[in-house]
Image 1 (cartoon, protein in one colour):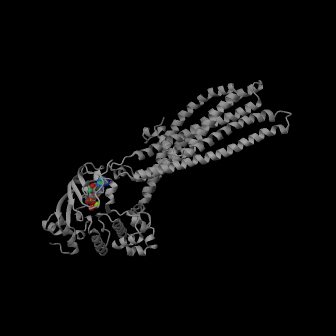
Image 2 (cartoon, helix red, strand yellow):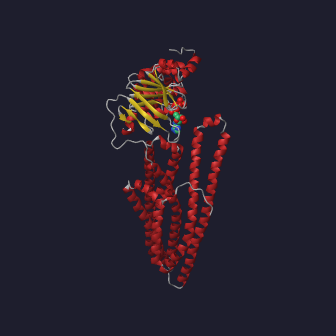
Image 3 (cartoon, helix red, strand yellow):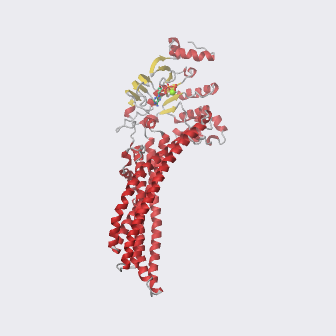
Length: 598
Ligand SMILES: Nc1ncnc2c1ncn2[C@@H]1O[C@H](COP(=O)(O)OP(=O)(O)OP(=O)(O)O)[C@@H](O)[C@H]1O
Ligand SMILES: [Mg+2]
């Protein structure tokens, strides 16, 4: 047997994973009851048809019977057909309803759970892959809940019911058939197992293809700028071909399996019928009985055929539910403790870092912050400068509690961050991040992201303070203009001013500015700087800036290097000290022909 690479851990393939789905289905008992009722009625109607057929054949086709006598049989049969039609429609409606509902609930549950997870999780699980899983895995699940489950139940009911009716009609023939069936089932089960393995690989390959499309198209400008279209096309083609190759193996196996299944099952039926024909000749069975028997045999064979097919669907759904469950049980490393300490009211914004040591989980050797202590009084403005990679942004990550320190403690208004609810901490912080994030929505919605209840007048006030009002007015639809995916319809400086307006509107006691004005020209930088100074007034502010001109007026400047504070003081004192800061200042101000000195 050829070995297939199989990335799904065995614990994910267990059918018991489907219990996850049961948890969601159980929420709709009435729909479930309706679906089951319709299903049973439809199955009974299906099984009633051969019974009628027997009566029709034995009475209707007997020589010499008159037309009036056979009418009731046909009326009854028509009635059953109508019941079958209506019950099938109801079954379809309710079962599909449950399927769609469960998938909708599952998607919502997974998404809202993911929203609570910390950044470490998303460093280990790529968002593009999760997105692809969330659509492709739930599609598989939907297929099972809305189609396969009902097919399984229906066919189990008609299959077993059919066998029972067959026994009542012709026990000897049925017994013969039951002897033959296990012989036919065995190869089917063996083949089915192989088909499933390949099907799973095929599924994974398709997910790979989806992830790749998202990644490449998301970075289309980089791809084109570096003229890598052909390479990306080749890379994608390879992935697609590999998916096709796996699919080909699957359909080849499946085709072979179909041949075996059909030959065995219908071959067995033919042999049994042969015996039946002999029984009719000898007068042991009537023509009607044998007609009904054939009908049942076809129903039963079809039912078992379908059952083997949906078994594969169930296995796939088990894999998909396993992965969904994995997402659902992922625990946030950062979460509110059981008895979260409330932060004191009113907020002051006093921030203390006490001998903090921190390593990024993905980079365990090499501390991003090393024995870092900083005491920021309420209302104070502290500038953070230092070379790239010094750990400045990391400091902000920790203050927002996206990560916990390995040692030491961070306190906001006297409460250790680890004792408080992260949401409470973040409610007191407004941040302008280094990488501006603009959502695919209007400018208005983007600015009031941190305060959805803000009035339009408040939004405009914030936009003015950030010197964003002018360009906002000039947009095609003003502040209601759609900004495109990731704000592609704005310039870098405009995006940055939008982010500043968002932080201004947030109106929090602690303000974190990470290179908030780096994308602006000197003129707008000066204006925005002035606006920010107004904003910093009465707030605790940490401001990171490469351009030292923007941090001169801070109450205090700390100079970071290699995750440590290497110097601290006012601009003038640091220049006089002649360390790293003086060196940075000399390099910058020389070019700008500005006075450097104290
Ligand atoms: N998510 C992460 N996982 C692992 N390492 C990281 C992560 N983010 C940052 N680092 C590492 O931590 C160190 C400090 O990074 P940080 O982003 O804090 O630098 P920075 O001072 O803000 O630099 P810049 O001025 O270039 O923005 C760097 O060595 C960086 O490689
Ligand atoms: Mg940074």
